[in-house]
Image (cartoon, rainbow, N blue to C red; front, side, top):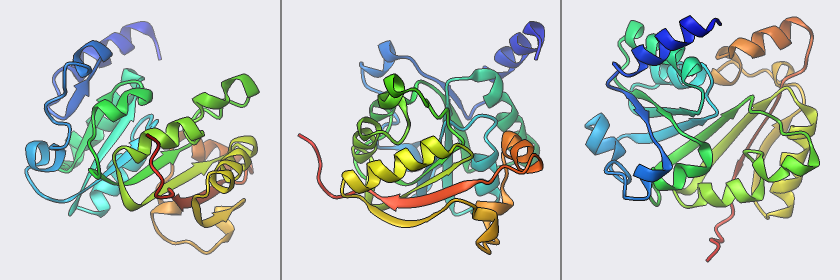
Length: 227
């Protein structure tokens, strides 16, 4: 994407009523929708589901169209990518989807205790280098952040093409005493016929066309909360 097109997308992002661009300086002062997303923004009492590192928001919009009785928020730092998700919401007239442009390590400032019912982590940056381990979205450090707002029994879904990220996540689940509900190294050979296979991201389609096996797992966090 050229620089001019990116700037056009950034400008249009400012016009969407379901787009939030948040920074640390404003979050530490207290974010008004924290603990109040469903009643305050979506105007209902429905469950709230997050897609972290959402990119173009394929899962945010795909799930929102499938489950109108739930609310969905995609989170990413790349504004140009979020533009596509915002346009899809507009084109499909989805009233239960929103996007936040923010660094994911700041999300405890945005969501309150027991506010989120489910998390999807779809094809994140694998951060394959050992020095980047703490930056992986399924690292112990990030799981502790999720505990601050994920409801007890809330499910975390992970889809990835990267075997290093996948196996590291399995290790983190085991070492952290979390409950692994399901895992597979090749989700498209498991007989799933739902959003796990029917919703595909832009890059996932490329990897599938190249014969890459897509890994998937889901798990629940343990009930221990760090002090």
